[in-house]
Image 1: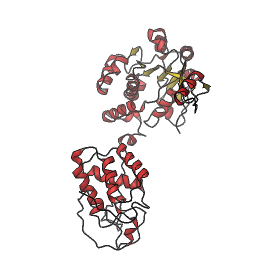
Image 2: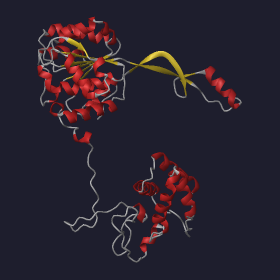
Image 3: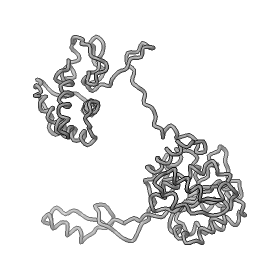
Length: 405
């Protein structure tokens, strides 16, 4: 197939981003996998070469958008349907001229989009093949109805309380948490690396790099401080008062445990380490195995005793210089003074202490419970973490950055 040349300017006055997106969509509908990298290469080629004939546009699109030989025939068919066999030329002003109406099958994926009735003035400066498809609604007099985009499954659950999620929604929450925990707390180390940005000039590295260019021009190399990841320790309350939130918080703990840089614990009347169980490949199996290991689940609460046991154990060194996250409503059977002493010790050992209390989301909440009031002065962040929308603030607090608006 040899595409015919088109006289006159080509793609003048056309939104090229919309043009590339529309042409790529037609190729995907025909079965050709057009990637974002290919679309970017096509855009760069159009900007660099500016084709003035249809055959040049054909070769630019063919070389950048198609990477499999058996797709060439399909590409030729789509290109002919869009350009060669089209009723209107590529010039966007051609729609101003009346053209004979030709019936197109509605189920044809390569059929051009119907224009304005009567061949009137076009409402946008785009050619017909870059306009979105229109759907007719017989119940109204409107001739154009654009489809409404549906929210994703995660967005649908954004404001749903975590204690009301079912098993399928909790599984979706777990997958989202694993993909969202991308920010990790770091600390500045004593080591330095050479980069293009920094405060101190690396004189030796600058001179060595300038030897390759004959000492001119000279590009300054600078020392950049190396940052090391911190260890995160998560302690979750699985007592009777936290029963409705326990499973959701276990998914949160699993998202951190699978990074191999976090330690996870559950407590009620005693402390249980859950890190080996939560690193399981299956989220359902990990949560079930973790639930079986906590023998005192949904019982009483001894927060102060369990925190003291954690700091005294060999895993207490993971708290040193790291981030301690406590998920509890603050209802403790131990005396508040005892909890305050343990929290003071934990605050001195940890770099940051983050407390998650789902009861704090209630309107007019005040930390009037003795244990919660005793622990609050030693917390660097106090967050509700009661919905999926509030969980990104937890990641920011752990990473030590300001919360999102």
